[in-house]
Image (cartoon, rainbow, N blue to C red; front, side):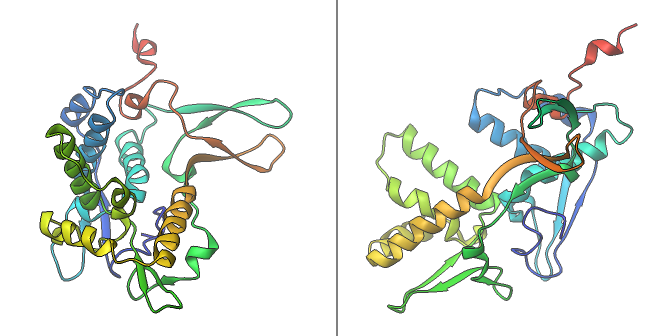
Length: 259
């Protein structure tokens, strides 16, 4: 758990995560990704997670929806590394150092750098509640949770249904919604609507703090790949895929396999 971007801090103590390699059948389904459709891409990432990752939560049944969204990409690469453990599908990015020297860096899960929470957040981290727990001088309490895949799935479905039926919804609350629900299993239309109504009672101080917290969390997420520079130092480059995101599980240099 400590190797995840979340470092396991936002899970129930004792939680375990296991992975297996992706099958040819699952990679075949992966090949149908439409990289221009963000919802389709999101669904496909969740498909691999659902099929290849298991989570065991002490005292209750666990599903892939209990995983924190911040850990999803790391786990995708963990599955990838295990699927191609003999180096059948190596993935590289080209980086340049300050002197203009280019080098190819192999992308693996161990080189990923994804989540660097601000110290202003971490000083309010509660190990007992696995969240950021804060209290304003006016007595209002704010608990900020890292969103799970289950929470994000509900919110994305909610937005999609509203848009398809041309119904209005509170777009301001959508900004905060992923971070205020602790358990996706209790998230439904009634609990969501209640949370929206409760948000109208927030003070100016709470609204201001919520806005700043979401801003800090968003800036804490910066997908990159760490590497050793030619001078022996450590560098970081944006995470990108020259062959498109399909190349995570499809062999991009497939012509090299021809005789």
